[in-house]
Length: 314
Length: 307
Image 1 (spheres, rainbow over the protein chains, first blue to last red):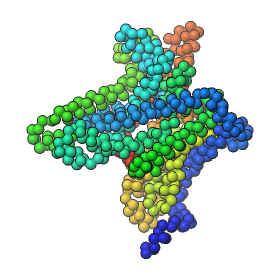
Image 2 (cartoon, each protein chain N blue to C red):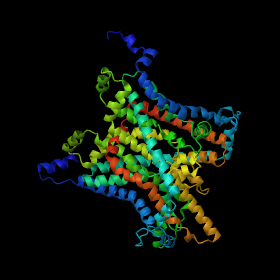
Image 3 (cartoon, chains in turn blue, brown):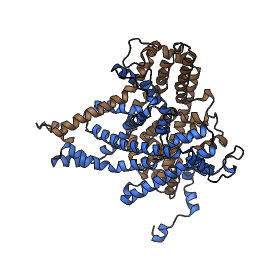
Image 4 (spheres, rainbow over the protein chains, first blue to last red):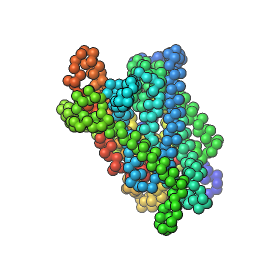
């Protein structure tokens, strides 16, 4: 409109925007109020980690407690263990997730028979549709010591029955399997969508040049999936200090024997809060987790931005 | 891949290469095997739920149907149906209300942020996005909801915590950014306000999006046990999944008590009831799947795009 550059760059005046877009702002209001109440105000609640909580004082008026909550957390000696478990489980989940989901998507894409493809995909989606409670019921059905299907088969083969709830060593495998079982069908759809949106002429050209099916997967499909993978992995890395509460809580069912291999930060915080009712210490553990999460996602995103800005989240 | 199809169409006789065949064999075997692995646990649960209790106690959970078909466990689950009906009612009500609210919230917010003529959209987008980077965590949220929002035994505790998701908002935003601006602009010229444009023009064009977000939300609400566990102690207000969780747990506890006190366990058909209850609690949401599947995959494609 014949204005010079300087005016174009300048911010539109506040009241002008409000007057012109009051309806849009009004439409934003519910979400704004929502995140203030359920996200931003709880963020201020992290002060609990530095307070000696009492009921009358509540979150904001309880007396300060310095770093004593964190000291108590350190003394309990479990923080290192749960942090290690959380990270290790998540690293395995992420790696398994990428390999299985991407691999499954590539293989599904190769299948020509539409009925087979549709049916297989529907079946693979089923586990995503159930809650961890139901998944817990399944674990019970299969691995129950006296009546479980697994022991049915094991004893049928002439071996001794296997008591899962007394074998901490078996749990990492079971938990990784469960996670993959529940997640792969859903996760593969994202990759499949990326594959189908790829330029098909590229594949035809490759075929004409004599590329084999394996070469097309290796040199065309997989490289084109890298951006999608980067975003998903980045998101997952940002949550590397956050355990999947449902998975660990519903399948392990708080067993002290299994704690060293199955306890993650989330279940630990929950237990501290609900069982021992120690608000200050559990808030300290939660604060520790939030800060670690924040730092990791910032670092991950920073690295990706440096390496290739197109893949960064923001 | 395309090549083979073209060959069939043109009718030229070219043999499929060993590479294509080997890829195909691998694909069918791996995908088929994984699909079966996904299905088997459901089959086991269903078979167990139709097996009489006596057989379960004697032989354990069956791998194959035992031949004795029994509806005993379902009968027992429904013998005292008040609690199950309450749980069903609560779950359905919460799922319905929650899903509607969640879809409205995420599409309405997503629409505003997708409007390119709205100068503050990036600022607000970051305002929302920041909540995914840093969170207060369980303890402050819990204390806040219990103390100041009075969530204890309140139905709102089941609906509000999952009503707005930034990820759903981002999906909505990127879907709506694909709707041509000219639609909003021409309606604006005709004097329609932004809310009317959203309701009358944008929403009808966003059916796949609504279906996807609706499914995501419905799934989250139907499968929610966490909020019941945190905030609800009144048995009439339990969600179905939490009811099932309690049943799996308490039945186990009852069994232990029965064993310790030497009472015959067989008087309480716990094992088959657990499985029947699992089927009852899972059924509806799985049955819903075929109807929304085609929207779902479409919507996932949208979700895959960076927000």
